[in-house]
Image (cartoon, rainbow, N blue to C red):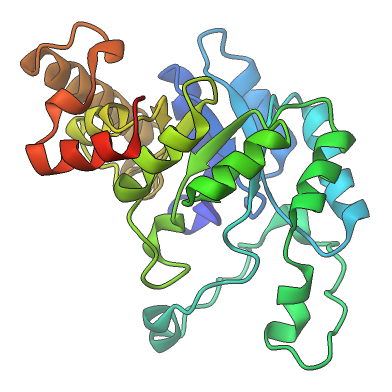
Length: 290
């Protein structure tokens, strides 16, 4: 999630610190307002922390991508998350109507020296579509780093199989919060089909609309191994800084455990299609066994 200093002066540092304190993982965005080294220092100092990953927005220059990844490795990040569903910003009408612009002092600190996109004749968006990442770029990225590479933004079973064939570490089923490609399917619809295509061995994380512990339980029942949250972090960060984010994460975990108890699940491994309503379960069954 980009530009967190819009919500609080401590920005991503506070969110990461809160996640570590709650034993949750943290994924730092390319468009962070806080340098990755400061975030890594805060997280890695906590012995009870979860995993620390770096999210990469593909840049037109491979050398710049390599430098970012190597910088993340040196800082102590433990995986690279390549976002594949947003090579350009989506059509955001409300953002345009509001005249949104970053205020002074808030900028993407990792992209200050990013090379300009070479122009491409006959294309829109200043030639950006011609430089969107391809499967060859995914293979190249894997060869540039010793870290596991995850792909974020997959919704189609065929893409899941192609990614798996390239040896990625895992997939994040995501529609970018529903604000990038208009009419993209909900992740709850896509998740069972992606799980059926990927099989049991490949880890799947899902995001999009996770607001309560019951949402987490439903995501696990639909085939996810874990979930990610975005907007709740921004709300909690604005309300209470690091303590606000830590409280939100604890509430989410407590709600999940209560939902498990109320549905008869002693462990998350017991969460499956039987927890869902018959119509949803039927979709799950058509997708294939978990």
